[in-house]
Amino acid sequence: MANQQPTSGNPKVDLEYRRRKNSEEMRYQVITFSLMIFLTLIAFAAVGFSDFSGWFIVPFIILLAVIQVIFQLYYFMHMSHKGHEAPQLFLYSGVLVGALTLLAFMTIVWW
Amino acid sequence: MHADEKFTYETWPAAPERATLEAKNKFLGFWFFLGGETVLFASLFATYLALKDKVPTAEHHLAKDLFEMPLVFLMTMLLLTSSLTSVYAMYHMKNFDFKKMQLWLGITVLLGLAFLCLEVYEFNHYVHEFHHTFTSSAFGSAFYALVGFHGGHVAFGLLWIVALMVRNSKRGLSLYNAPKFYVASLYWHFIDVVWVFIFTVVYLMGMVG
Figure 1 (cartoon, each protein chain N blue to C red):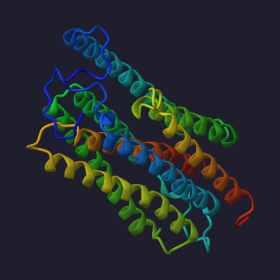
Figure 2 (cartoon, chains in turn yellow, orange):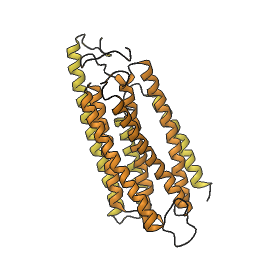
Figure 3 (tube, chains in turn yellow, red):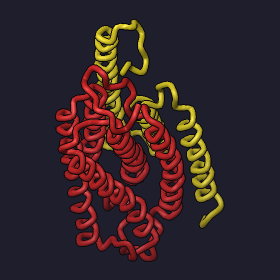
Figure 4 (cartoon, one colour):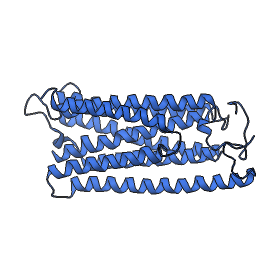
C-alpha cells in the first residue's frame, strides 16, 4: 500500500521525509503553545498588576484572546492545512451569527 | 484504503484522519458541529454580558467580589497545557505510535480532570461563601449557565476520550479508529478555545469591574 502523497517513489525516503515534517510541525506547535502562554500571562498581568483604566484593559485583553484563539484554531486544530475550506466556511458562519447575537443582546435586549 | 486494513509504521498514510470516506465525512460533520457550538456559546456569552452584575438587592455579590485570580490562572494553565498534550497525542497518532498516543491522551485526561475538580471547588466556594447560586440573581443564572455549560463540555470530552482509549486499548491504530481520536482531539481544542474567552470575558473583565 503506497503512501497518500508519494514524492520520490521510494517509500523509505518518503517515510523519512514525513517523519521529519511531522517533528518539524510539532516544534512549531510547541512554539505556538509558548506564545499562547505568553499572551495569557500578559492578559493576567494587565488585570492584576497594572494601573491602566478599564477602558484600555478590556479591549486589550479581548484582542489578546482573539489572537490566542487564532493560534489555537490554525495551528492546534490545523485550520492552516490544506483541505480546510469547508471547516472555515462552517466556523466563520458560526462566528458571524455569534457576533450578531452578541451585538443584539448587548444593544437592544434588556438594556 | 479500507477501514479494517492492517497497517505498519511504513504503510500508515500521511493523513489517517481523512484517508477513508467515513473519515472524511466525520471530519466535515464535526466541523459543522463546531460551527453550531460557536453560535451556542456566543449566545451564552451574550446573555452573560447583558446580565452581568444584574442583582436584585445590594447584599448580592458582584463579579469583582467573587473572582480570585490565582484559581482562575491555575485552571487556565491546566486547560492550555492539556491542549498541547493532545497535540502530542495526535503527533504520535500520525507516526503510528499507539502506546505514546495513549500515554499523551492519558495525560490530557488527567489535566482535564484536575481542571474540572477546581471548577467544582470554585462553584462550591461561591455557593457557600457568597450565596451566589443559579437562582439567586439574573447574574448568577447567566454565570452558571455559561461557565457550567463549558464545564459540562469538559466532562463530556473526558468521558469521550476515556471511552475511546478503553475501547481501542487492545486494537491498536487503524483507519477505523484514527479519525475518532482525531475528532475527539479537535473537540478538546475547541473546549480550550471557549475557555480562552471565558477567562477573558468572565473572569478578567469581571475583576476589572
